[in-house]
Image (tube, rainbow, N blue to C red):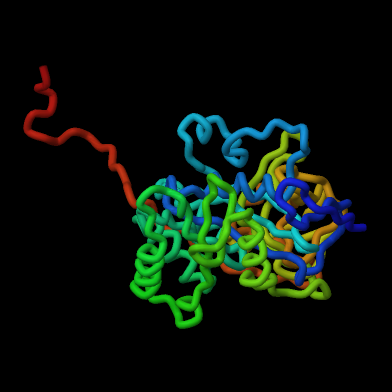
Length: 345
């Protein structure tokens, strides 16, 4: 059952829950995409704080989603990671993506799990090179982004100019008429507020939460159809081994079910689901079942890889493999054939 309460610090309606399977219409799957240093991880920190993910007495570190040593050392996001919050009866699955072009493959993979993206743009700098790349990926997949003009409290910020530049970028990238009619909001991730119009009194991030609920479409699919899922990312557990993470496209999967894996070569093998996990805040929690629209981790599938299809063994469906862009830089290592070869020194 759901237990509702109101946050004392921000007056946001959030839910403390005992986990049960959500209906697709009550799920919102979004990813936050941005150029590096446009405030993506800082905004996500504030979303988690104001959604009461943390206990009142809990010490909250900066950049809570950057859990790997390299990420904390370098101050950047390298691996896409997921979290989940409750708001007004809805479950919002949020994927934090890398902002650096070197890790663009991570962005491409996870966009298949979500139904819209929040495109974060610095209200002073405007669209930057990685803004172009991540937006292009989202538009090609048919997603209708929500634009968040961040850092509006920064000196010399000009959100209206940046909004015009962002619209021009949409046009340049071939956005459809529907995508050009994107919703937008003004925000300060550092100060923890969002406003619908310049001049509104800043309070908290409730306007952004409301916009996510209204503008993000519910996941397609039905709980009544046979189970179907495609692996978007791989997790690892020392006890259960590799886990397949992705959005469930159709049906329901339960712990103990037998499912069929179809790999990139079309080979079909049956496996038993030994463990099923979902997300609650920053924590992975073990669950008994997960349904269409939600993002889950399925364990017990030997040698599962990114792009593999997981299907009901009685209704096998083979999905096309996930296509990843080729690397932008390549290196050839070969024998030195220059005229000065062997004459160094």
